[in-house]
Figure 1 (cartoon, helix red, strand yellow):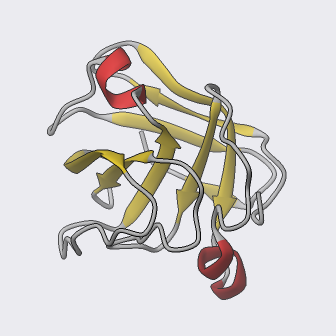
Figure 2 (figure 1 turned 135 degrees about the vertical axis):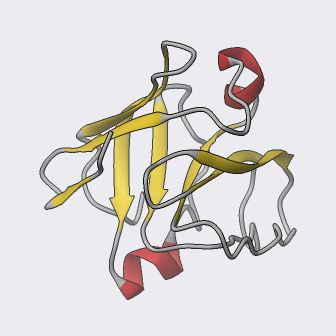
Figure 3 (figure 1 turned 135 degrees about the horizontal axis):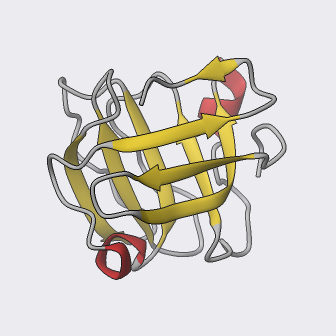
Length: 130
């Protein structure tokens, strides 16, 4: 990934399910711009937390992703499942950040709007409230 080293996690407190155990953060202009571009695949335990962010695209990507939009307090406010390459996801003004995950993560974990997530982005300097 073009972001920081994967050293954190995203945990759905409502469903008691991990969404990612190797979470990277994109919190600079360059890391948000690059995101997952050029990556050949996305491991099932990986995730990319984009902060700040209200919408994403999958231009130049090679695989579909699940997208979880989060409020400032890490409550799920919108979901996009299996967003295919070369697509634009909607912009959600209520979102403060976005979590990009491997395809089917949302379905497999039962994640839904209103769920409370806990994000630990160790080593990034960013600590998300739980």
